[in-house]
Image 1 (cartoon, chains in turn brown, blue):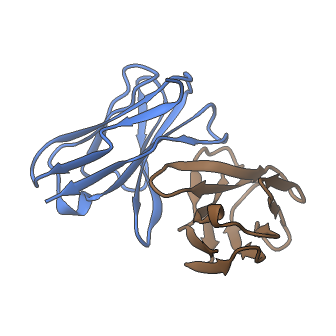
Image 2: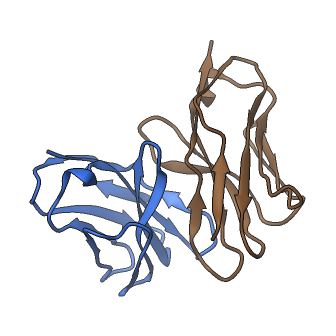
Length: 113
Length: 112
């Protein structure tokens, strides 16, 4: 079945460091891929998405490219801020006629000033 | 207020009691979902609903009951709470099955 695997956390970085959070997926068909972010005490909210191979999603300085050949959707940001401290979830939505969104386990990011 | 709201935000109960968590959305989204979030497990789908009066089981439905008599409401009931149901519960809604999901702020439930 479909699945999402993302790197375990926590990830601790200093402010202005480069961020990469790895995400790989297994899916049949052509899923849409998402990154959601969860700030402390809040629900998840969409950060970015990509709906087909080679699409790049971007928002708030974060980027991720849908790589079908490597079944990956890694999240990157060139210069993180303390306010980026949160839990990041990679997710896929079944493109084969199903409906469910499969979420990865989440990666907690701490950014130090 | 527009959006998706959950109540209560925090709940403490005892084993064996019935508990209902409420979820209300103002967008008239067709799809609604209930997840639980536990350390080491990420988000797991409990139940979902494609429309009013249409519900179906997710990954971990045992011990939970849902109903959806109106499009905007999707309550989740724990019929006889157990300690293993201590968790943070999130409700979400979506315009379509494969579209973006919008989450409530969550309900933190402790079963003593």
